[in-house]
Image 1: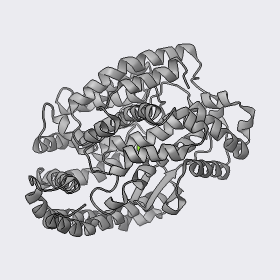
Image 2: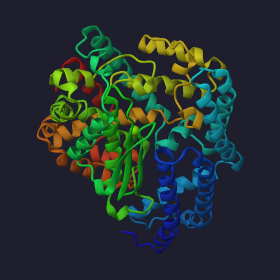
Image 3: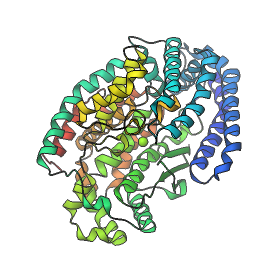
Image 4: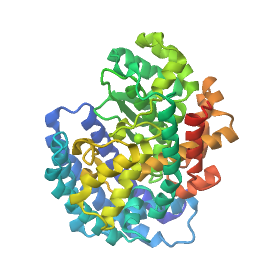
Length: 498
Ligand code: MG
């Protein structure tokens, strides 16, 4: 697979980088799970030093060889992919002046700290100077990276290789009208409720943990290669194809939140675990992009987890452990899993409204980056747009413009990957229905092994071998097509097809 002598040399040198990434991931996982609070004092130094070492090794040992291979015609598919992935990393660093990298790294730490303190009090003015500087620097970064039509192109590409502003624009002009139509219908009809009593019932944390573990058993989580732990915000850390860890949280009531977090993170974990073993410890290990990764988590969480078929599978498990669910029939549990309620908070939003939250963030980000609006006016514009899209208005910046961590950690251009994930998940479902058999029947027969191997063959096995857009065409037969998501929403929420 890897024959070219220079590529083999690169891979040998890459092993040290991989090891640093491995250590950083483990340290990151530990910081969110078991590290004692004062441990952060040493941990932040250790991770900053390792990041610097990683960068030095990449630029000094790997970049000079990769640079000579960029235009090579003699490399095979696998070798070319190695060069593509590493060259992207090198260019992200080399094209941008050191002072911008340095200031952004510093701002990331400071601004997120300021944001964390100012958010609960809704003090936008305290956070504002940081946000202004972050957007200025990201705009500068975009100029250095280069772009096609809009500086936002450059920022999108940092998170989703090849994604451009015109792609995102086309996606939203397809889905926003459908979402609005479906939402109006759902709210008028009331079949999918705006609230459910089960949201308020307290659960026993130990019992819910047993539910979560049983669900992971059914889905096929390999415990010899993974763990489930607890953190403030659920996440997945892939350390290698043999060690992937997921977390969830236990808030005490509304048990579906903890359960769906587990199913979501299972989807992320499965992707990392099912990459071709030949790519282990190479630059091709792991998922190809944030959007494709999110398609896997959303596929398991929403398309499988919130289906009627899955509700039937999971009902005996929750009844056994939580007991209070025994008073509700399958349809009631299904409705509870699928509450549709316009919410001010993105992370609390449902399948129907979620992408409107992303549309809002996308619109604002690209207007700021494009110099069309000023940060001073941001809270007002946010609230107006929220009202226009969802019919509700934040009373405070903490439930409006200040709710997400992303901007404070300089992640501009990140949000659209969530929508890519939601849309791609629906497209994958359509492909599976067509090529393997109806998903709802596979779920009802607990044929999760068939679903896992379908996803492995279509997406997981390739790791980063193909750029995301090429992978989608190769595996699904056409580029990302928002119509599958529109149809999925209408089938489920308007026609009640299960
Ligand atoms: Mg996710």
